[in-house]
Image (cartoon, rainbow, N blue to C red; front, side):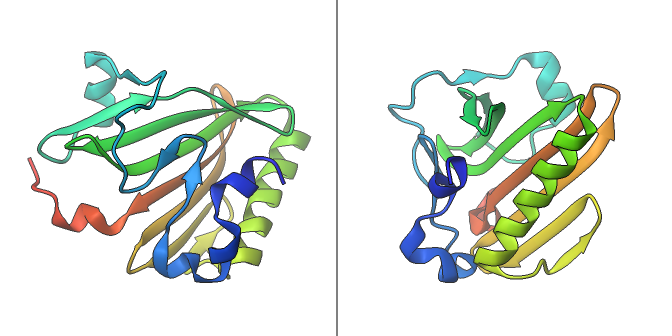
Amino acid sequence: MGLFSNLFLSPKMKILKESLDFNIGPYSLNKSISGIQGLKEVSKEEYDIFERTFKNEKIYNGIPIKYEGHEWKVTIATVNNTIYKINIYLFTNNSNDFNNISEDMLSFIEQNIGKADKGRYGNHQWISTAGNIILQAYNTEEGFYVGIFFTSSSVRNFESL
């Protein structure tokens, strides 16, 4: 399954909704960024767009991940050098690719976690005590966007700015 076999630890797929314990390449929720190569902190201009929410929060662009002939960009957010959010995303100008990729992602997550707790075309959310997963798929000026956000519930314990 390529990327998706690395997204979720297979023995835990059915309990993922309660644990959110998985890896995406070298990135893992609730783990330190220590030793991860290729991370580049976003620029001041990008911070103006992303707007930090928490004390000691930093946002990084990671090394892209290849899957199904597409390159997925990676952005992670940390507090005190611990990952609390992972975002994988891509843009395509091909509407067939967009439809296939977004439908495949939705189907895979639903098969392994269950139906979305909240959702409508283009925005689906799975919510648990361990965190949440958000799948977004929509058209932008840059092309068709498909992205998944994985967020740890540890955000509930962070100090806001």
